[in-house]
Length: 275
View 1 (cartoon, rainbow, N blue to C red):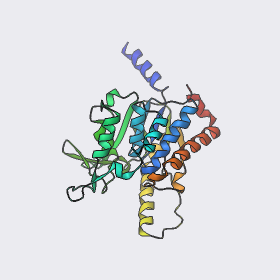
View 2: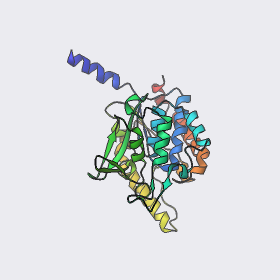
View 3: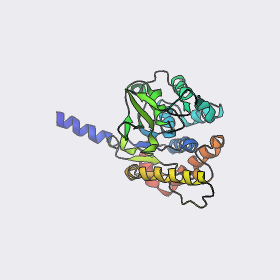
View 4: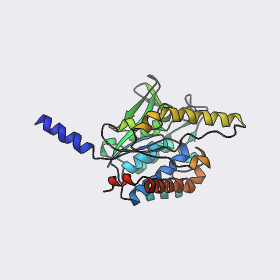
């Protein structure tokens, strides 16, 4: 019976589509548009992996919030302004310019049970363990707010999250598209990468070089995750906006929706995932 049960478990899990959402700051608002377009085409997922903003959007979706509800949260000033997610106390903090009290409070307000195990969909959050210099996937237990915050802890900007005497920071540092977190549960993974590689045109300022270098690093550490995705959607909002363009949320959202609609039209085989 054990072998038969294992066979049926493997067979059934392979029928469940998964979704992997990259990090990307404000560019991650495109994920909400992607989710809306997928739902409009009858495509729903049960397993989600995410890094940074992908972890925030993915966790809200896993908790049962619809894309429309998330978009309304942004319009209501809960998600889009960077000042709403950051509480600056540079004199008091040693590991970053700001802490995550606003973000953690928001997660606990929106998801009162604050537990991975009570989410409606399986959520896998990517973080970086600085002690081991490795990325890790967290997918169970309580303190959901802590792990969402850790995944979004941009090094040098946000305070690192401490758990069991270990420092954790933004998962995008070492894995910006963590599809590895759901490959054991899904035969088919839909990936959404809001920081696809684009060739730099003009690097007029040191900050231009810095941003392009960080994006190159993130693209490189996303390669394994990208290869695991049967379908890979790449919204082009990065061509007009950047990681801190929070005020452009509506345009970024629309970019995700349009990119997904176009992708489905050009890759109709994705419709086999339709419920």
